[in-house]
Amino acid sequence: MTTPEILDLFKQATTDLLWSSESDYPFEIVTWERGIELTPTALFSKLEQPNISIETITLTALFNPVLTVEDWYEADELAQVSRYLDLLQAIDSHLSDVQVFRVGEVEIAIYIVGKTPDGDVVGLKTYVVET
Image (cartoon, rainbow, N blue to C red):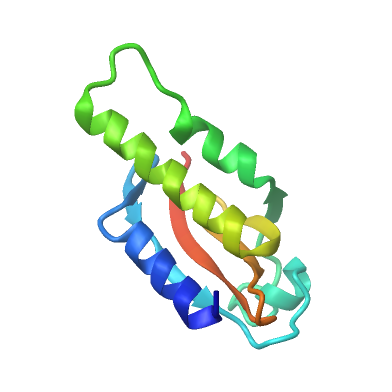
């Protein structure tokens, strides 16, 4: 798949999909210049807060809580889990060198970043609130 096709797939996969924490946040597509290193320093050097906290986690650690099916789940919760699984599979299938970064404290930006087969650096951004 080309980068524009992957971005379109991600847009479709995240339409009306919210990441839930203490608040619910949508996903947005993020892109960087081709060839940028997948490191916090390279990706986030232009942030307004140069000393902001940046933590790296695995894609599995990010998605495990939303992929857990509880006994009491009804159709809408099961559909939500299915959408998260589809999104995870789209990321795994179409991006290489995937990194997940948690940027900030309390209202934390979550960046899922990887490389497309075209060599572009793209991903998804959402937020979690942890008080």
